[in-house]
Image 1 (tube, rainbow, N blue to C red):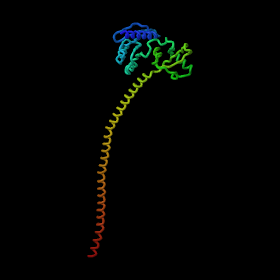
Image 2: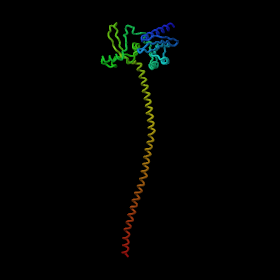
Image 3: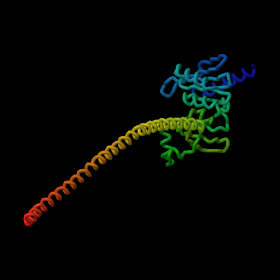
Length: 285
């Protein structure tokens, strides 16, 4: 029990320090058997009031249900920021859900204190859009040519930098370093994995729908084609029948014509021979 209380106090003090570094002031702290909630608020640049909630679940195993409960609370209370302090590593689906709902996860691997107070950590600041344009013009480069830094970096998380932001990192004079260097924030590998898997799922779903459409078309074509073949066969059959009907009639007519010609020839020869026979008989007489 003493170890658990000491751990909770340490986490609560660390969460307060993180929120105060971000400009928030602690308003209330609520605690029950399941969660330790730290509420804070601040006045933004446009004189708008912003609220934040940092939740520490006392059960070290954090799943999708815990993430969804915090996301629902964030929507109901219209919180600008929601943080979840997790002792144990989150499951794949819990990480995916936190990215979807925009909940910041502070794991046990991240330090629960202001890391910039340490003498070995250089100070990080975000550049404004105007400063980024001047920087790119001055060095004659494009934004993608700036060296990269992951959004999962503790210093990046501390100043709440997002992918696409450009950071100015002041070198530590204690270590004999001078000047500053710049980094552009990119998505972490885990987040890229989530986006890749979601895009792959979308592509596979699109492929399935396209294949279904193609199969339906082929089925429709397959249904139509046999009828077309049957009609073509019927047409051929009717043609052959008509030809078969026409050919015998043509032969018969030709035969009839030949027969009539023969008959006419015979009659002509008979007509020629008869007068000659009559003359011969008359001479004999």
